[in-house]
Length: 206
View 1 (cartoon, one colour):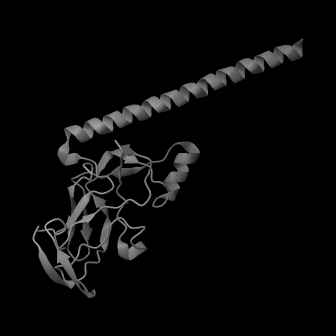
View 2 (cartoon, rainbow, N blue to C red; view 1 turned 60 degrees about the horizontal axis):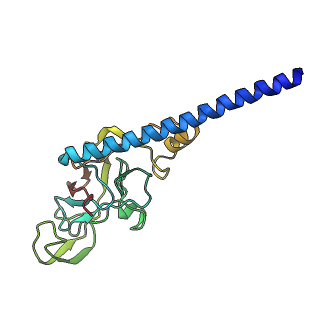
View 3 (cartoon, one colour; view 1 turned 120 degrees about the horizontal axis):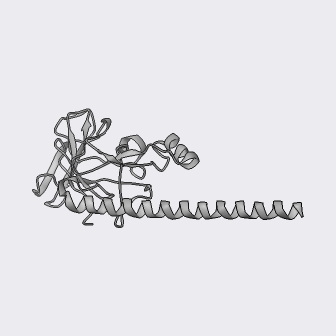
């Protein structure tokens, strides 16, 4: 009889635990849905502060061409269907190659860095000044100082592990990842050669 009482008590305990776990999962899903709704509302109401997503259009004030911001591997965070980026998304083509980088070259650099001489075709769509023609000069090979500046610190993304693996491990083990600040239309990068790289389109309309 005593054994049956113990089994019934154990069943009740397991039942309470399962209910608690189910409740936690539901609470997490609700929290996630609320956060997504808040992100969308923020983006709609603050056009200058629109979140940057994969495909955001960038220019450098020293470069001849526009380029799109790349995100080789997303973090699972989206504004509608668009993957959002964070402050560490500033790896250049020179650092890791075109397939893994966030920032490619911006055509010809006015600062005349010690790079090879190249010739590029400009069109109204791909050039920074919107003028057609042919331009020759020192190839842009940006060297980023630090990371993205003027990010939105209130909303943070836990990295997928490629740029901040320790934070990803903390999140997976304890649910306590600190996360990285999210990028907006106000964010910018600084290049060693004096260039300021900034977005002219958030990428959300693509």
